[in-house]
Length: 339
Image 1 (tube, rainbow, N blue to C red):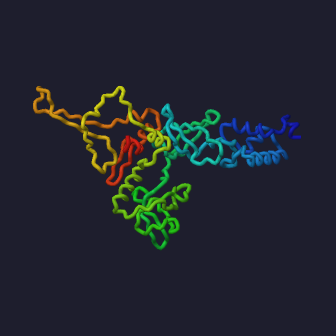
Image 2 (image 1 turned 135 degrees about the vertical axis):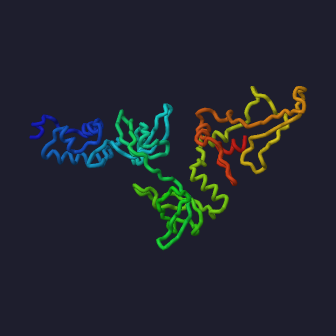
Image 3 (image 1 turned 60 degrees about the horizontal axis):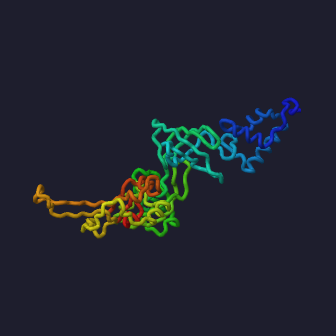
């Protein structure tokens, strides 16, 4: 009887999915039934159809009994800022994504009133679909990030194992059980990574990935500074490959100074060798008693080409960072301590 009143056939799987995809946001069973004029006992058939679409992976359940087509994003969700495109626009991806296919592309509109977000930040955002697989997001709130690794002092008390982060801004109490301590002793400085995450509070349980020794050791103090200032210490495979493939710069088009007895001024235990000097009395009678001084500084422009993996790595770091026992180089060692 319902079909005679509505004069519309019962919708197919494809029609239901098309309706959900074309909707501005998530829709529920009520909106689908109203759109296709489904009444009475046919509501049971619609319920089974929606279950079948979910089992096949064509449909995913959203909040408040709403449905989303596979690969679609809800109107509000947590995003992770992934980078900046060539036009200077912020790009993001869902903080949680369980689909096999790549997530939709999300452009984030900056909102200075709610805090400026940059690559690596997590934001709560309102989303609007502007095209198939493309969304525009407006930041509602910049969320506190969860560091991938944390440095702290391992402690034991009546409650069990604990980690006291060296960063005073980290106020959350972290649990470090003895089985995850990797043999560390109470009072020892350790590098840990999150073992489990609380949906609101972030890292709660951690595991040791490296024991750093006593907190008063030079090595430990350097590592604390590196991690607290989030200095990048690992180069991408592409950057390492470009550095490893480097060779001597061609002499053509350059002034050849190899005949001068340049003296390297970097110490024997220096982390890189890129500075040298040479001086001789100036023979110009107009500069009697003067000297001719030449300072030679290595120029990496021949190796670091605009847009290359090495260029991106150098831009991310800005400069090398020196510590009493180590250096965090701007370029891979094959260049910074080689060519």
